[in-house]
Image (cartoon, rainbow, N blue to C red; front, side, top):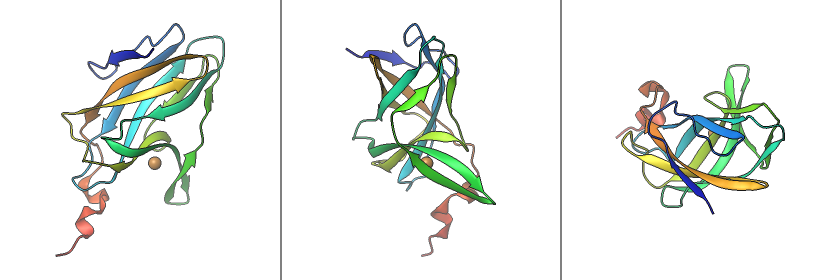
Amino acid sequence: MRKFLTLLSLGLTFSVNAEVNVTEARAPATFKFASTGAMYMEVQNNGTETVTITAVSIPNSITREVQVHETTIEGEMAKMRQLTLPIEIAASETLSLAPRGKHIMLMGLTAPLTAEMSVPVTIEFANREAITLQVPVVEAAVKKQDDHSHHHHH
Ligand SMILES: [Cu+2]
């Protein structure tokens, strides 16, 4: 059975179970024609055993596919590579999914992510219950100039 948790405000700490807390979960709003989006959160393992994330999923009604990526900076180029699950979080460690680092990537959005919505994400673990979080979409901090939409000429 899954636990359903609702994120009421940013920074709220979830007691997912005795050992795992998820904080700062959010997804930046996207531009109107964006086909991809990102999701960030801090997953803290407060226990004494390794926690293993085996799957991350978001309903098909929102995005075609979910991947976990890592951004690396090579020279002046930011490159993303896909990480393969499972991902382990050692005892007392935090998996930080944050801008310019590891992140959850929504590939093939069915509609743009807008600030009024929330995105349900289900995280599955080895040997413990899956959790579903309602992750709020927040206004993106990135400048509009960084988006590709201005390359359209009519
Ligand atoms: Cu990515």
